[in-house]
Length: 76
Image (tube, rainbow, N blue to C red):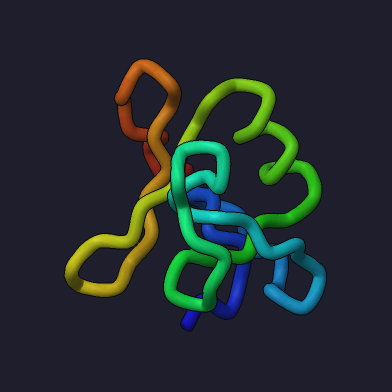
């Protein structure tokens, strides 16, 4: 369960976020808890405008990828 925005490096709490499809609905993603993730308004909009995606790793952490597939690095 995510407790903050799933965008790499964002610390906005999930209570201040919108729920977004991890696999987009437009691409056949189901509308269910298992296909949802919290994104703050800024990052949710950014992902939709740029084609970026978030994905959950097997260890449970979230990672953000730009539309070209490059990973958004966490801030130093």
